[in-house]
Amino acid sequence: MSDLLGRLRARGWRMTAQRRVVAEVLDGDHIHLTADEVLSRATARLPEISRATVYNALGELVSLGEVLEVVDGRAKRYDPNARPHHHLTCSACGTIRDVHPAGDPLDLLPAAERHGFQVTTAEITFRGLCPTCTPAPG
Ligand SMILES: [Zn+2]
Ligand SMILES: [Zn+2]
Image (cartoon, rainbow, N blue to C red; front, side, top):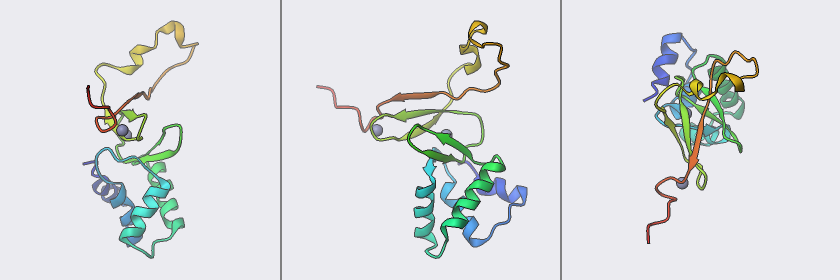
């Protein structure tokens, strides 16, 4: 589990019923939800929750660094896994998994390709077909 709720409690994040639902919706493994998905899941749990509350809470969680924004080309997604990691994405259905490649991804970029930059981070997206979308052999 990402233990988002535990991390927010430890930081003293103001936890109203509405804000708690936003954190609960995001907590877990391999969670990469768009703002609209967070809103619809939060509304399912707490019908009176407002769009503004959900969007404000998301913005705060990102500023705190407890939730990462992941852009997958189509939409911005919210990811409660705040530790450095990379993504494995299904080109057909959009499923996203958190992955941890062997070695340091920064080593992939030789000095000649750094154009004088001090390179500090890298985010890699591996793409392919998930088991559900892979055609059965034969
Ligand atoms: Zn798939
Ligand atoms: Zn992720």
